[in-house]
Image 1 (tube, rainbow, N blue to C red):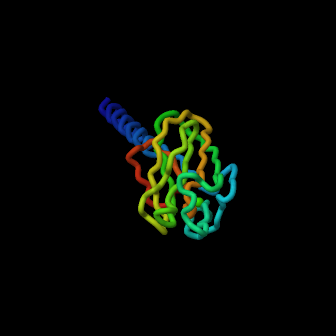
Image 2: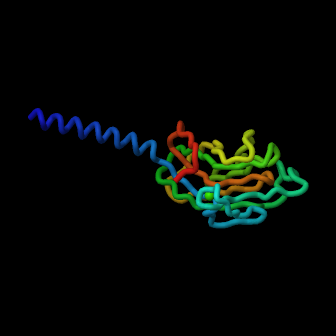
Image 3: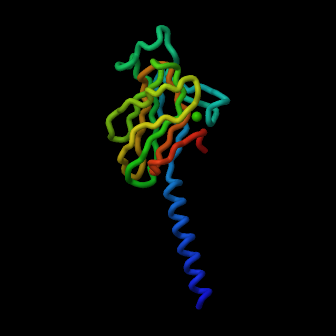
Length: 172
Ligand SMILES: [Ca+2]
């Protein structure tokens, strides 16, 4: 009788821990080079420092910083991302920016309007940048990363339902 009770308590604790683990593990990671479509001047570039060996970029132009606000070309990548469940998802991108005039993309997620992504002040190294928080249905969602400023690079992006999660390194 006593043993049975203890077993039940352990089972309940294990179940609770399992639920907590699943909640924090709800995350969808996409390599930026795994697009379904790419349009120049967006290009795929090999790098030993990038996750999966590649990133995408709008290469730096001369003269630099002539595209802000109204992109000089339609350079973009398009992705099909499988969202496991409906709800609010936080978008993060692992970016490397050239400078203050080369630190953003436009990101369009599903039926949500395109928004600026970036504009932070970390240049010349890979770092995670917080993007939009979006309400998404379960199933395949189209993501478009569009040229805004030349000199912008993207290695990976992810969606998480854990709104407190802050990615640090390249994600598996
Ligand atoms: Ca990558």
